[in-house]
Length: 459
Image (cartoon, rainbow, N blue to C red):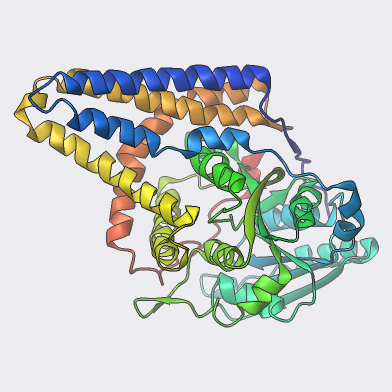
């Protein structure tokens, strides 16, 4: 296979300067919350109502400070032989993928510093304009190089039934010890598998989430912004959940599972339904849910994958609505099946309470004559808090060093924090409310009638 441009990344941790910066930004955000509480407390004859709301809203962001406690898991010396003996199967579903992106994905799997044992590709009936798509050249090169490296491969083409069926077409009967799920538009860092296996030294760990980076970050403003918008979840909430050993949602771009977890859910996983409709989205969160029922689920920040992000707003909007609708359904699962005394139940409640406050407080301020006269001051103070919070999230950019990103490019991404703040408030929040109201549309996949993003834009 022709070698694509080499990409590497390493986890840089949180050095002293980064920690000091985080403390400074957190102090600024705290000052803003205090100012909001003071402003609202001096209006009207209800001095404690809205100040209490602002303080509650800040406490609901519990994951922001906790995320900084996350550290990559290392393998204890006594467990090294056990980890090295694990048989690893990588499964890659393919549907209308850019051939060069698929080629780069497959090569990144074959050139891992910790070799995998088996790679199983399933083409889920790729077709453009009604004509089947062939990846014959990619397949030939892939199988040739895999044979030279002693890695077993399979490549199947099935009727188009969706990602879950493509995965279980081969995993339901695979005899591996660990399954790695990987999207076909994603490229692994050379040490991704080695790092992703490390948490399995703890027999209680059932799944491991990899860290997702935007591959085509230089393709335009939307792709650059997406890298910043990923942070609250990929290096914020997920990192904090990992400290608690209760990650709720792995990324389909890269995740590791004890194979027995996946084999045990065969049949139920593919046939999940919501309100009588087949669930065609949030496959990654469903597998994480199964894993969480039998043990610990964690995030490994040093196991990294580069993935292609949407470059056009139409593609981006469809992707976000798909994710949001799937997440809305998954929240119902967590509230129903997770223990009432466990962190997943209560963090889900906190997430909805935070959304409710974000929607209700502006309405209260506009509707109440006592506050209406100071809307300008309140809006400015609230904006200062929001921007400070987004800068605090954006500091997580500096915990990763990428071979394709200069310090200046990293600073440019950090400078986009205020734009990310406005995007979340004006675009993503209304979109999430719409997704909640239309979450029954879980059977509408909504992407890839054609190749959406090509690898050439990532150069």
